[in-house]
Amino acid sequence: MTIRHEETTEQQEEQEREQTGNGRGFRTARELFDALPELPGFRAEVIEGNLIVSPVGTPEHADHAVALLLALVPVMNEHGWRGRPGSVDVCIEGPRDPVAPDFVLAPADCPRWGERELLSSGLIMVAEVVSTSSARRDREDKPPLYATGGVPIYLLIDTIAKPPSVTVYSDIRDGAYRTTTTVEVGTPLLLPHPIDVKLDTTIFTA
Image (tube, rainbow, N blue to C red; front, side, top):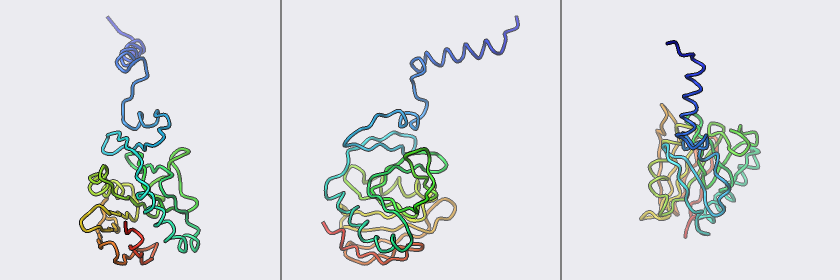
């Protein structure tokens, strides 16, 4: 008996629809992220193939992101860059995973993935403010993820470390950051090219 390819394909598609809930299932965490409704008070990210929904940070957490924004206003004005504390998602170029940094520095014409997400390779810097719930992700998962996406500079504001510290990752080679500089909060930290600003980290004092 000869089975027509079209019929086999239709049968396979019907089986897949049944297995995924009549076409409403999701094959990837990215698909699930795209289908999420707005979640006030929470942020969603896809990291290593897992959808992670976490509450927004404390007021102090937001204060650090805003303090960074204010510190960078002169260089932003000089270059026409835009700083956004916790207000946009970023699409990691390559795996297309969406993440929600605490701060994003980008040119005004940064390319996008869809309507909402800035494309990682077009950014200048991202920053994360470490909280108890995000410590492992911010310290361990985010550096290779942002390097994979071509983000030139990653700033890690870790005020829950002992002692509190700030780390800058830069110099991407072979998909990884090759230069890492860590200082205690209160010690100036040079944000490398193209920012070229010595950051006064006392702004992150709790």
